Amino acid sequence: MSARFNTILIPVDFTLNTEVAIAKTLGLLEDSRADIHLLHVRRTSWHARLLQQLNGMSDNSYRDRVSQHMQEIVARINKVRPSVRVITWVDNAQPVEKAIAAKAARLSADLLVIGKHSSGWMLPIGRKVIPARIAAATGVPVLTVKPGSLQNPIRTVVIPVGPKFPKKKLELLDAWRDTPGCTIRLVSCLSHDKDDAYSKDSLLNTFRLLKTSWPGSVEYDVLRGNNHAKALLKYCKKVNADMLIVYPGEETNAGVFPARYISDLLPSDSRTQILAIQPV
Image (cartoon, rainbow, N blue to C red; front, side):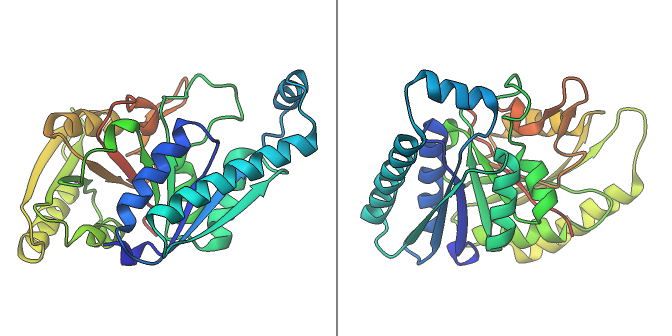
């Protein structure tokens, strides 16, 4: 499984988000060798700087504290996975999402893991990180995890199938081929008022392919709903899905105003991880 993920990037903010992302990453790695890159982005906004000043922290003391926290994380990872190489980075110049995307692209990362312990959709503009947007901009697969997913191995994977064959999704799915008892649920999302013959054909073709090649169980369903992201999450909850593999866009956009994304709708205790990958 983990042979696919040899270069993994984890944004760290030294909160529960970091703990969740690291724990999930270590679970993915098993005993293989890999490079884990830890990236801390210092917020450049004026209110972040003001908060630092109010706390009586100079730039030097801030850097020292970040360095100390980073080394503590490195030591913890190496204690559990001695064969893993851990590299640390700090970005002081860019907004958080832009810095994460730039580092993921520069490293040609195999996977970006983002921990989210809250929805975050009410945070001030500029502080929000949208995993699907990073996946679309970089082509790097982005895994979003909540605390509720930590104790659950991958047993049920939901894959939306549109009019085109989901090649990139199936390539990622192969990373879990050796997971015992892993069930695949293919779904086609159709609006309430019309059918899509192309999506149905693609769904059946993908089902036939996996039925003869996937070692575990393969099932399929047709969902109805004008908001695909919400329909997918409702289905994931119904079947206790451990992972949802999506393409950025219609499968991840959950609303227009306020702008919301599928990761915003996941409660903190959700067992479902969302893996976003750009189709081309």
